Amino acid sequence: MIRILLAEDQGMMRSALAVLLGLEDDLEVVAQVSTGDAVRAAARASAPDVALLDIEMPGRSGLDAAAELRAELPSCRVLILTTFGRPGYLRRAMESGASGFLVKDGPVEELAKAIRRVLAGERVVDPALAAATRSDYLNALHDADMRIADRVASLRDQMAQHTRQVADLKQQSDAQAQQLSADKASFLASEQAATQSASAVAQARSGTQASLSQAQGQGRPAAAGAGRPAGRAAAVRVLRLRVARLPRRPLRDPDVHRHVRVGRQTTTR
Image (tube, rainbow, N blue to C red):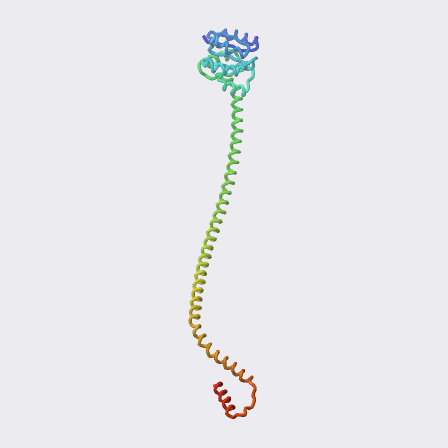
């Protein structure tokens, strides 16, 4: 016998479901609650095999109650039965640990079969809702693919731009390296030329100093020898001037006059 916990906030719907399910030979409703807060306590007290839960209930929702049963009573299978056949509810029910999701407008026989299937470990989803969910999923997947494709194209454009920038930077770096190499060669050439010029200047200075030393060594004796005749001539000129300035008076004594002339001649000689 399959033990069933029934959670439905509408009393008439809950009673009708209990009666209809009780008509099955292998199904038995062991607990009924009208709020989501009472599901956990009723499940602990009755130990059901399958919990048939509505989504919209006072207190906790059927989705919250399903998560609690999944955590505290993992042997109890959860089947969501609701009038809200929406893909979003289906996704949340599966995330909460529910094994099945059906809408209330289906026949009771399908509900009984679904209870047996979830107890056997299968997952049961309303076919129309599954198709709608699949369509929504495919649409969402398509949109996601389009966003991914756009993002990939954008990344490719950025990579191409970065590649161009890297190529430009490399070209500039190569040009700067060539310029630096040329500047280095020019600097080395200038330094070599300056070294050669300094060497030539040093050699010229050494030669000039040697020439000056040689000239000074040869010029001093010649200058000393040449100075003597010049000194004598100057002395003679001074003496002549002095003699010329002497008063010329006739001498009475011929001997004296002759002596003076002789002296002049001697001096002039």
